[in-house]
Image (cartoon, rainbow, N blue to C red; front, side, top):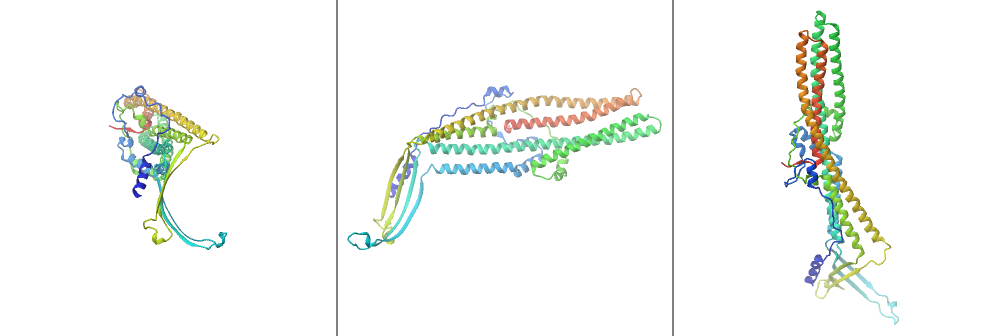
Length: 466
């Protein structure tokens, strides 16, 4: 009997049917679209580098991103969603296999003398039983399989959504960090300028007292110094705002962040180099694209699960155990009992409940299909914008470097001409004012160029494998 029972269970595991889920047909990331964005189409592996921020070779940045990924509440929520999806999948996977339960009972019964018309005698007897019960629903129409595949896709979607949260957080931290470093560099430039202008003002005052300079020259120099101090105050205000933004991302106190020596000493890194052979399929690996696609897969499988309710369900059951009137004879020969059976349940009238559930599943799948296409289109738009922005910023940064060099040389020449008496002091003031603006513009453009690189990393879903 044991062999029959085991064979029954094994045969039930192999029974099953086809899925009623429709074939999923969605638009893919076309190579021609990638080429239109400036990429060369290659057959290289399109695996994403999820630690893309390390391309900047900045240890301070690396530690800040790691800190944010460990402490951020959005990350914790995303991880809990993964755990929830994994638990849901475990429930669906359990439905693929038979359920085995144990059942035992013991009773003592006395019959009534008055239960018999002829005045019979009462009787007293015991009943002891112990059995194992096996139940299994044969997945004839793929309902259980579709539900299981839907749960797997939902888990993959949760994992991809968590990656999207990490990508967004890492991008925000990196961008905020570079903005703060840029402002600190601008502050250092302004402070150096103030120190230089204070020395110049003192020399001008001495020259005025000696009659070598006019009072207007001293007043103009004083106004230039005051202008630099105003610039410094504005930059310090921006540093406070930028520090607050970065502190929120890290969960840190702003004062502690401003006192961080490593951030004080940090400088803007070199810009990234974008290769010309980024794989054409890299956008398909964007976390939000993957999450949206898996949501579509899940909803498509649920259509099959809903359609299965139109058809009969077949359940198999088996029982093997022991039954005896004496507990001492419960496991002896002849006390065995077994039963194998099957039941078929078919829907007759449900007043449109099944049809409505199928309609709901189909509509949800259509919504997810549109969301997926929208996500893909948005990915192309973000990559296009990032590449277009970088092309202009690379040119602007080169122009900013050239402009700063030219203004610095202009100041040298104007100072020489002033000392020779060929130009008035106003020309020197204009050149000094322009040089400070050129230095600040160079740092700002550098930071904007780095920000465009971050946008490119984010739009691609991460870095590219070298």
